[in-house]
Length: 192
Image (tube, rainbow, N blue to C red; front, side, top):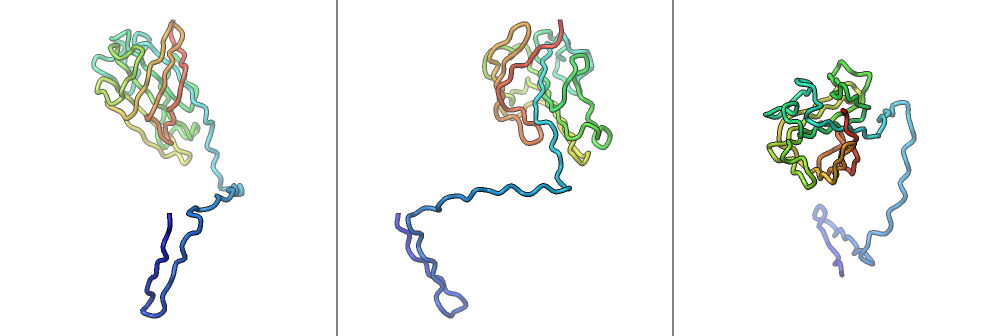
């Protein structure tokens, strides 16, 4: 591709000429030099994703900060998935994340999905389906944070397989910098 010479007038005086690019390329990108560490650097915490799964029958009534109608504890075949930056306990899987209060775990996040029984089978689940509920919360390094809950979230989750001990899922287009849940996961079931 041939690039022509462009001429521009500058203040009504001499022409200002931009020479054409030779070879049509930008050359090589220089190696980036990592910035020097300073005392102001923030520890971003453990990047490890922790996940557990509960069947609807294993969810304590009233224990979720959101729910479907009917709630999962009334629908034993519902699937509730808990993703977090923190280790989650089967007996009490919802992590208390109060902005300005639970700063000792910052930075931290949790993302919970409730999938109703009719969608809890191998196959692709569009999280925008109004039968899928979610809850997400984050505490930032400065102890600020936020979250949300509701029905109909972006992205998909593919249930690849499920047995008595675990569920294998592929999560796509769901996460972001605050809730990095995208990926392939084998999630152990809590309960009996």
